[in-house]
Length: 293
Image 1: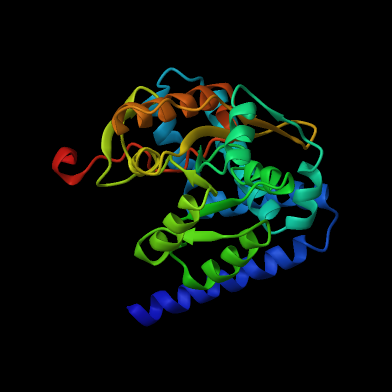
Image 2: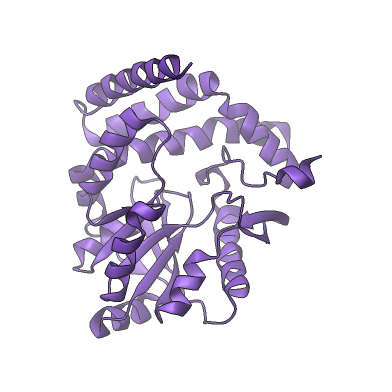
């Protein structure tokens, strides 16, 4: 069984590599359109993404019209496809972001923390392109690292990490392997990018989109431990192919649960405003086994 899974991972990765290689031969905007089409029309049906999207929408928006549900089933994978090929197109992606202004109530606070060498935790979610802010801040001379969850497919993970590394370093894998380096970087006054909206079996039972969602408290706990600014940030996709780079006001230090709920609420506002840019394929509201029975 292990050998079969390894072979399946390898074959899947070969197909992904070929598809990415072919797309990278095209101009940037054409490449993004093709990636969105392939993800929506081919990968999503094969991977069962539509079913997951429909289940999540039925849970959160039970009165959503059938036409809107079908639009979301198409548009959510399109955004995912664009985001993926953008990560593999670091030079073009960075150039597209280079002249985009930072906006929002937290821009001045972020600049002040950078000048003072104060640690910062930049919290975002799987909406728009979550690496747009990291790329933009690196362009402006900020020291920004990223925390990432390694992919389940080890063959794919190798070139995926290489791709996101080309946008900027350092990067820290979740778990013990990257923890010490991540803490050292943060304590030195670095800015750490974190994606918050993933199911965590040992997370706190907070709310997101009106439903209980187990959420990691680690970002808030790190902010309290190292006196780091904690700031919600977003790279929202525009119709013209650019991005709105939003830096919200820092979340005040208090209890980790209160701070993390504020981060969930911030992301919820963005999801409601840009529904088709959030990754509705996540099992975000999965219940632990003792509640699922």
